[in-house]
Image 1 (spheres, rainbow, N blue to C red):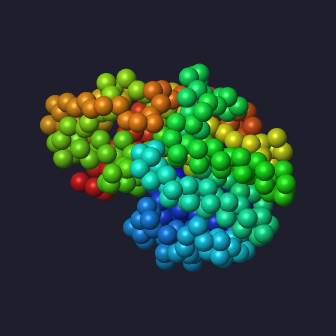
Image 2: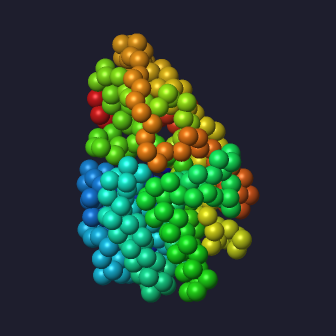
Image 3: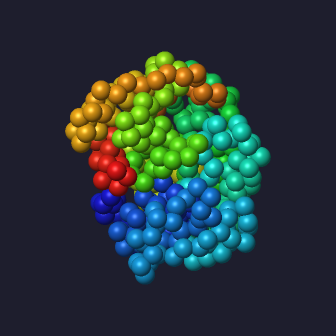
Amino acid sequence: MDISHLDLNKEHSILVTGGAGFIGSNLCEALLDNGNKVTCLDNFSTGKRENIAHLQSNPNFKLIEGDIRNLDDCQKACEGVDYILHEAALGSVPRSINDPITSNEVNVSGFLNMLVAARDAKVKRFVYAASSSTYGDSESLPKVEDKIGKPLSPYAITKYVNELYADIFSKTYGLQTIGLRYFNVFGRKQDPNGAYAAVIPKFVMHLMQHESPVINGDGSFSRDFTYIDNVIEMNVRALTSTNKEAVNTVYNVAFGERTDLNELVGLLKEFLGEFDDQIKQIEPKYGPNRQGDVPHSLASIEKAKTLLNYSPKYDMRSGLKEAVNWYWKNLK
């Protein structure tokens, strides 16, 4: 993605934690294309080496293989860095339900290590991946940043704790922080494999293999699916904003529309059907609702528009078409 229009100084050195992951590797690529110096910190527990293999020859790219649970690794990665994009985390609500201890170690203890390292290295700004799961059992739609409910999973708790810690570090140590509450991000490089794969790449793989995707529930649950390039734009806007009111707060990162799972399967069949006509005939199967899932998710993006001039380019349909084209080309 071209981010040259967003005025990110090419001289800036940026650390991307979790830089070999889905979102992190896309951020690394966009920043390097912009001419920035990029350090990637990853322990490859969920990140993939192939996501950054093509970046290794770039003289502006540095890989540090380390773990955010280790403060020394965090401090080493922060040396000489101007900005941090903190993407490293263990995602997935089901994973956190199955293993809450590890999710907490990575998402809370690891997050605190990164804040301490950022403070000590005197970085200019710490932008971190928050989560729409923070809205918990709040039933109000659209989701507005200052109205949240009680968390519905260990994962949601960890992401809310991140926001609380970031706020304290801003007030206590003067560290500039911005949290980005991601809403169901999808796009190129998102892993379709594994027990905790996200719904879009998982459904794509099933359909490409002429298998029925399995929908949790009756397909009426809806999400504000957010294409990766919108997320990249928001991260860079968070880094570059000179608006004093825009820092030390959190933002929804979404498009501001919702799509239910039945509609999602219909769109995937339409786009994949352009490559393979048989896919159009595949019907989904239905299973039980997933523990910890909220029925509906829809973001208000007014705060991001107002304070960060956020202007998402990709709606669900256009983003999904881009993603499907990438999956067909790279995974078929």
